[in-house]
Amino acid sequence: MSIPSTDKNPTFNLHGAAALITGASRGLGRALAEALAEAGARVVLVARASPELDAAVAAIRSRGGEAYAIVADLGDKRSIHTITGRASGLVGPIDLLINNASTLGATPLRLLLDTECEDLERTLAVNLVGPFRLTKVVAGSMALRGRGVVVNISSDAATEAYPEWGGYAVSKAALDHLTRVWASELGELGVRMIAVDPGEMATAMHAAALPEADPDTLPRPETVAASILSMIGDPSRAPTGARLSAPQWGEAGR
Image (cartoon, rainbow, N blue to C red; front, side, top):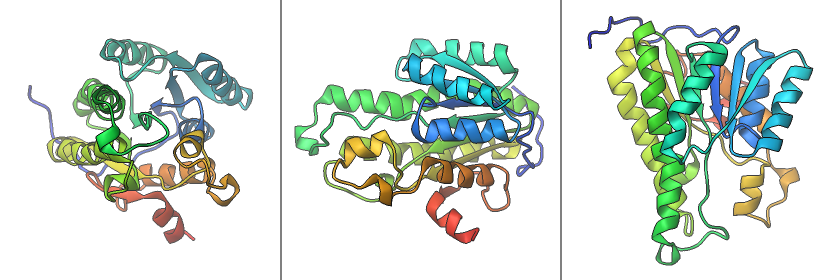
């Protein structure tokens, strides 16, 4: 397939953009969806939990935003074409994909020696293989149009070897490198790929991993979402292939 080359760092305007966000019923995913809708994007929210997902969509619409819900499990390969087909039917070709859906695996977190093979397989299916499949479908269209952004939500566990975080850490480390490989292959075609470590946040996932942590001492997902939107709109500071830290980005902007 011959695809024309274009500017490898095109500007990205959120207003009117078609955005697809996984894991969007709560936490960072919901905060990102709300922030994108506030910026004028047309957002499609994907998650497994229908009541929470419906509530997130209703909240966006109540403030005048355009939002739609798709109930699907990113770890199930049969859902990928359903997600992309329905999303494109609702908002048109996807301009922005945020691979945010993640699973910790079994909790309480455990040592690798105590990790079931099936739990590791499930973690990789959701955190790595699912984003690969979804990106594979969406990024081809982006390349043909010469524009698009894919954001993969990573973790500091991708670079730090924390005991008991093995399966999750392996999945995020692989996602980081997947981001770099995608960037090397598609960067000249106008498709920008970035990985973002959101840092600690007051979310249900953080509480499940570290139940002793005080959520009042942690940043809110809305604060992190604002930093990520700034990254999306700033290709000079967030070029394709970059691995970025939301806490550091926020500090730099102060």
